[in-house]
Amino acid sequence: MKQLSVLFIVSLFIFSCEIKPSEVTKTTTEAQPFVWEAANVYFMLTDRFYNGNKENDLNFDRTNEPAKLRGFMGGDMAGITQKIKDGYFDDLGINAIWFSPVLEQIHDSTNEGTGNTYAFHGYWTKDWTNFDANFGTAEDFKTLIETAHKHGIRILMDVVINHTGPVTEKDPVWDTNWVRTSPNCSYQNYETAVSCTLVENLPDILTESNEAVALPAPLMAKWKAEGRYEQEVKELDEFFEKSGLERNPKNYIIKWLTDYVREYGVDGFRVDTVKHVEESAWNSLNNQAKIAFAEWKTNNPEAVLDENDFFMLGELYGYGIDSKRFYDFGDKKVDYYANGFDNLINFQFKYDAKNDYESIFSKYDEILHNDLKGKSVMNYISSHDDGQPFDKERSKTYESATKLLLTPGISQVYYGDETKRSLIIEGTNGDATLRSFMNWEDINNPETKDLLLHWQKLGTFRKAHPAIGAGVHKMLSKSPYVFARNYKNDNVVIGLDLAKGSKEINVSDQFKNGVTVIDHYSGKTAKVVGGKVSIDSEFSIVLLHQ
Image (cartoon, rainbow, N blue to C red; front, side, top):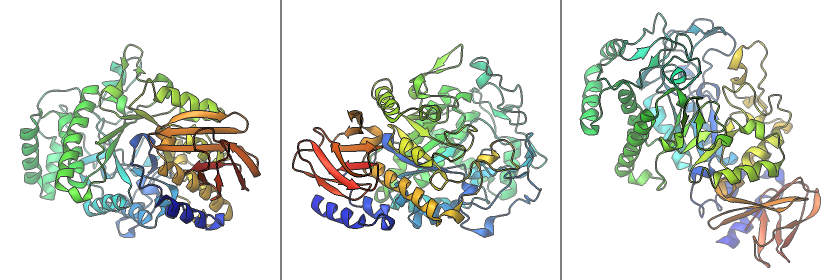
């Protein structure tokens, strides 16, 4: 089987312009099980990625004129599904997708000080039990997940517990035993970061409350008008009786969110605004999600991808890998890894990425295999709400890919990183500049194709080899720079900033003398002689494996 794999890959790489990375990985991923700690995640704003169904572009009379890039633009779940079917993510080596929330958003627009804005981003929930018509239907959600799973891609559902959407004429505030509307968070200590509203007019769910409460009046009225009040209440009764949980605000929302796991087989949650909710809520969400995931697996044995447990990724704003296990509020340190989370987004990587390769790789290796052993971090170079990305001008796009995709931990590709989608849009205010529509029109430009191919080669190599994200790092040579990664039976050797043309790479004892290794980047093969291999390629990168 291994010899066939070698021949297959070599034939595909004869001409770099004809490389189809999705085909390359078909013979190399089967032997290596999926590992969350090594995942290659693609994140997109659902509304800004691809319009798969133009019939759902306008709903709820959302016709007010928005500020630039602050209204709905047509992207939907059907669009994501279409790109999965097209093999776009396979070619990029993506094995998990995180898309912005698709639950029903507030119907009206509002102005937070940056211009008239609709909830195109998905973080202003109106109803946790329903999908927003602009993003699609329950059937669209089901099809998206099933299609992703057929491609070996896991789904991270973006979820919010901390707050509802803003209050508008069409979107009344919920009852006072459900939400607070003041004070605004001042971040002086734990209390002023948790028991407060993120911004003005963003009602904060009383997640600290253990008081049993009835459903909020606006939600009951909505369900009754839609003719589904009795069914929703029946399901709530069954959940609370079975779980034994109290009917407090957080547990209602936990029920609603874990329903998507139980019914559709969502593989994990990306959790919004982690530090603004008490740790007990995250533990409860994690516990109920695992129960729901186990139920889904039992009920859908033919659809189960692997034995991995439910996965929880947290957006703990400001957390960096240097903090290791703890986030410091000033008066209190909290270990969120011990309170429901498997992984936290690493807001520090954009700064670390300014350093040389070995400084980044060895540092992350040390922390991940010691202080964070059994856990991980998610690295990114740009995102939807980070106004200071690593490469805002998109002048270091090749370097961005190499550093992001080869650094230990989980990699998060933000839509358009791979195609040089501009992060500077004239006429926008605030984070809108980071949220333009995906630049599909550039995809066939020669410059874009070359860049995309670089991301594809690195991504498919990463996907095929969990050693890159989860393995132990070891520098083999400082100049030229060569290093190894080892994870269980997966061994790779990588060389960066090498001479173009003929080059000799020290593989040390990573591969036995006499074996033939493949350079995934060029498609060339070489025999190991005296702990070294010689590769003649036009590239300055080698990605070696057996």
